[in-house]
Length: 310
Length: 245
Image 1 (tube, rainbow over the protein chains, first blue to last red):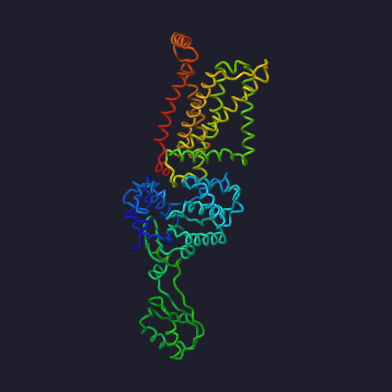
Image 2 (tube, rainbow over the protein chains, first blue to last red):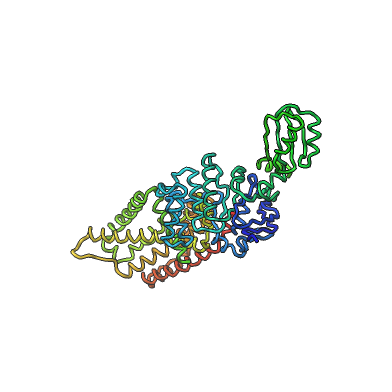
């Protein structure tokens, strides 16, 4: 049985100004995966992390992280997790090495182990040569990398990453994303990642939760979410399309819909399948197939449809 | 707990030492302040500086100024630079963070004041050389150390309290400056407001009590105030409250 890293039951949080930041969140995140928490700005992603770390108290409901209650055992949770929150949280007057040295001491790593780990992480992220520079002089991308290293310094079984690529240019964001993916694989940690970068979520996450205005709209594997929101489709270019072709296609059990559009044949499928038999069928009835484009609903489309539906 | 306090102190010291970019620039800047204090005060007093309570002024004025300069940054600065939340998300306990920050400010003020006091001793000996080396009298030196530590702790605990409730370092500096000014003015204004015969009685009591008793009473008063303010600051410092602030 898969162990659960994070479990929330009807978790709600509202602030003094009557803002309902989180509304009955029910969530289970298994251990050893990257969980992506998607949502627009102000949807409650950061509040969720703050509640899970015991930095805020829920109004109602409860949550456990690594088996510990967020209200009564928050210290235990903070001992076993790493976090890159909304801001990198780095001391800009200090060097990269001193920043990690401080948190290494905070996590009580013995000096020798601390040095080895700092070297290992900074080398892995390509920052070792610049370890003595003041962090304040670094680019945002480098700072975010260092903040990820800090979160993983004490080898926690669970890390929270709150929009780690926010504000980065596409190149830096992709590089950081690759680094996170590599480190997560190497260290085998569970990651709770909030983002509104859907490409990043698709690349990293085994499970995705979509949240809006504090309410969880959907949870599932990216493919599941896509399948739930829209079906895969095939676009065929060629000659010899007629109504008989359409009728024949509509009789096929895997075909949801078939129509002509601008001289192209569009086929919507019930699920992800091989389209070779369909193409074969078309050829048999005299269609001259020139091009076949198989497509599926992107995570962005799925996300937008979820937002619209709400 | 003690190891965690030390860790926070280490970080605070690093930040103090790097506040002007490099360690050298910071040390040079701080040494200038120490030299000015040490030389200007001790030159006027001569050997009296080492043997009478006149030197106690450096033991309380300098730590007060030094702590006022750095303590507003303790929480308001971390909040302004967005480093507080990450520290709160770590395994450090609230007391360790608070006492570590206070400890760093007090130890920094103590180290600089001790340096100024020793330097002023050198200045007195050099400028008024009579063939033998003069040291502080033991009583004055111990009273000085006590005054320094207690004054620094008083300002640090008051400063931490103010810094916790301030949105910016600037706001914390202004509030703390005003608070210290009011605290310093209260005894003076109270003296003016007292009836004349009360003032005469007070003068008589102080005269009878003597310097040692006055210094000891002041030290006891400072200990009480320090404990009260530290307890209030610990009570005020709650993670969840800081996040909501």
